[in-house]
Length: 99
Image (cartoon, rainbow, N blue to C red; front, top):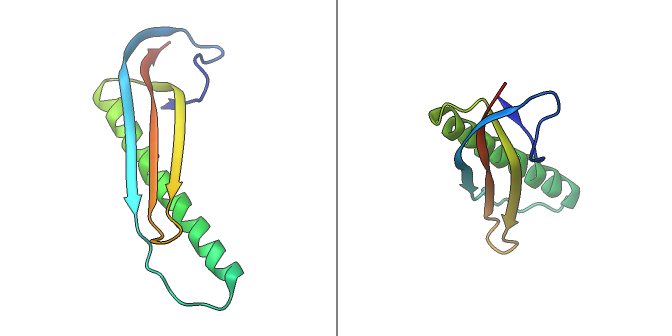
């Protein structure tokens, strides 16, 4: 599966546009009281990356369901709430068939 933020893939020809696909994941990490802010930031960054990876997996699954072998024009949106710690990752793109 080829994933790209561009609207074309160098060396490939888009054969068919199959539809818009999304991948969304939401997570609220457990908060822990810590006096080590660097440890807190490292932990939060790790959790964001985990949620992002899960959203990408959902995007790929949705593209595969449309018989796509690539997704072009990917846009990634990450929202966090500093008060609740909520992390929302939303990814969208166009599923395509390429040769």
